[in-house]
Length: 334
Image 1 (cartoon, rainbow, N blue to C red):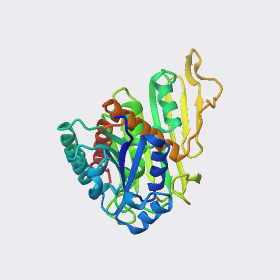
Image 2 (cartoon, one colour):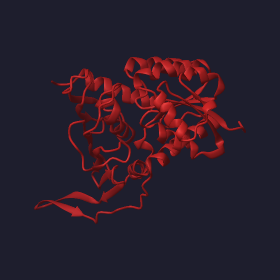
Image 3 (cartoon, rainbow, N blue to C red):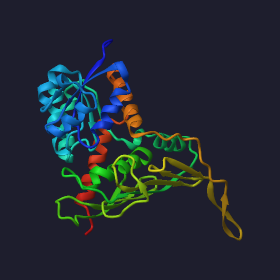
């Protein structure tokens, strides 16, 4: 395909301008349309330079005009819109969570199997330089046998209408755990709906993996974090993911864009155990603005569309996260 890829950005909510900036970073490789039923959202897109003739209230009105769709609508509309896009042979970038339920995720897998379309899930944190550095350290064996992961994703912010803290926030760290450690064999969870919205606003998960590693992941909309969130204005957030192995440990702070590598291990001696400690390292990981991370995801999507290959963060990753979220909700202890 030598001409620009024609993309419809469906949804222009709070994260819409970041999506728009990500697409624009691809320059002349993309022609963009925007659809959102909210007049205020369309006005915001208009103020950011989207031409009137490329705006619509209903994304269905523009499906025939494009080659691909970026689904950034509320999660409870993901499955329906994605199905209609696949019916029109569009390639799909879809924000996390891939669907609102596991049943929808499995149904979407069935639809995708009948096509040759590309589907990429927008797992934002996975595309950050910090997460890529985590992956490199693990794959290079720098930590040794993995033993323990811990993640906290918290912030006192406005709850979304369409999802709970599991599929809106903790899904990022669930995806990282699945990406770095594989699928867990056991899941224990504790969730709470303190606000009475019908979906959880606090979740704590314990995961046990086949190799013996254990992960503790938690998210809350009630605990203010340590620093201002660069994505959600005014939100004091903590987004910290730590990973420990037999030979070293990683501490990733996604708010500060900082990765610390510890080279510590336990050594057994006749008199007992001692700690062998190398220096804590700050490897050269350059942080990235949200729009830059979005652009990195869209560059991968564009390459997959051009080369007709499925992305790393594809259907399987979306399904794995959906299975884990469903299991956490079903098996909540109290």
